[in-house]
Length: 618
Ligand code: M6R
Image (cartoon, rainbow, N blue to C red):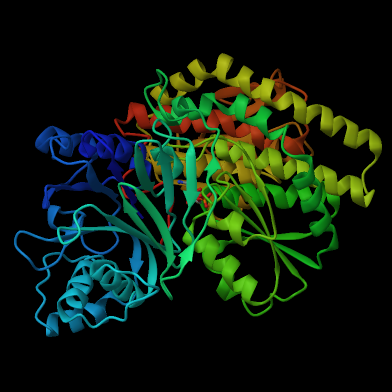
């Protein structure tokens, strides 16, 4: 998965604008970067391996001429992150005439490449993308394409013909010296958005790329081609060339939301934004919060599908739904869904798909399997307009604002807040829990933003000191019982992904069935121990670990002396949060710990190696 961006300006220079926009898309991938611009009929290109800042230092990405250009920030799928594999990719000509940037995977690229090589095309890279400019070149040279829907440009027709041959996912953009005033973009299964301004057209993989430039956007749908010229924006169907009309939408994310605002990293900024994001989740549109529980109530079976952090939110939610609403749900890792549940899903199944980006390929593939079997699809996402919102029967937008750090933080706690509200509403509908309990939960959920604020204000320094103390440890255990197992899993994922510390998370009760054999003197074990019904047994587990020499860090309630006196270190959470809501505040010290461990170990928490924000390949 990668980020693409491009623009046609009425005046000025495109390259610096593309460079700045790619920086805002860097969370989508950052192993190489490239730009191509058109000026006076000529194509100008710069591309290289490395993060955008490194490449800019070496090659100055701002000095390409021209008002028209395309750019790409890459996360390698086919072909190692070398300069030759960086986008844009070209046709055979030297110098090149056609340049393409692409996000997605062309599944039939091997066959297409063979066919094109047999026809004499010479490839420079190992990428799947490179088949696209060669295919366009082939159609242009052979003129073997049907003119579609009164399109009078050979280049557009050749591009439509080429796109018609592609299988897989793509958001792509093409420029050519044969039609040097135009950019063509197309999408299938990878996100593509247009930005509309008085003096420019833009396209990008994601909205944050536009925020300082415009707040007027148009979502491009699967199977569509966009023709951009200085005074023209046309959307056409690839299938028959027919014109599509689509209205412009306004986004209300302030541009400063994508800047760091004085924080050294987006991850830290986003951890600090959690109180505000959690408050937003308490003001979501009533109709959506009401509709989802109605569907859940009717469902014969509910399967929650998600990946990574979003899966941990689903796991926590399965405890919430069970305890509060007496609804059994199955949280399933999306990439396992088709194999595990594909055949058993039916019209009676309800799928709740949770995805911050709404574009995660594994989650969308699971939803597609379920859709084909007529299941009801419900969605929870942070990106309204994402594919997930378009394929869900009903969705809730969690309104966390853009999350730029690769590690999900604010979107996780907001997912949990929305899911707990859904569980409480369903509990009300089902009448299984007393009104008194519901009132208490509703009161407590309102307090959570303040409690999270208090953690960030009072415990951050302490967590930072812990990171200094434990930075050299080679492995950590994260243990929790009940819903805290989900918190433990998330704490472990954060530490592994940003600080590269291999770690293990287990339900605390399971630790003695094997993992305890790892414990030696000083082995660090982090216990998540809110004061719920699991506390007593967790204390037993702490003692088992302590007896074997482990160094224990507890995330516990303020003043919980039984735990505090047992452990080596602790982080306190303000009292009064019911266990079922505890993952929201209790994960925050773990996010901070991962962040400061990354800093102490010299890692960049915003751009962990090999990762990208949104995994749009299976
Ligand atoms: O956009 P999604 O919520 O679908 O993303 C799912 C995972 O890729 C994501 O949560 C990933 O695990 C994060 N890097 C976790 O910090």
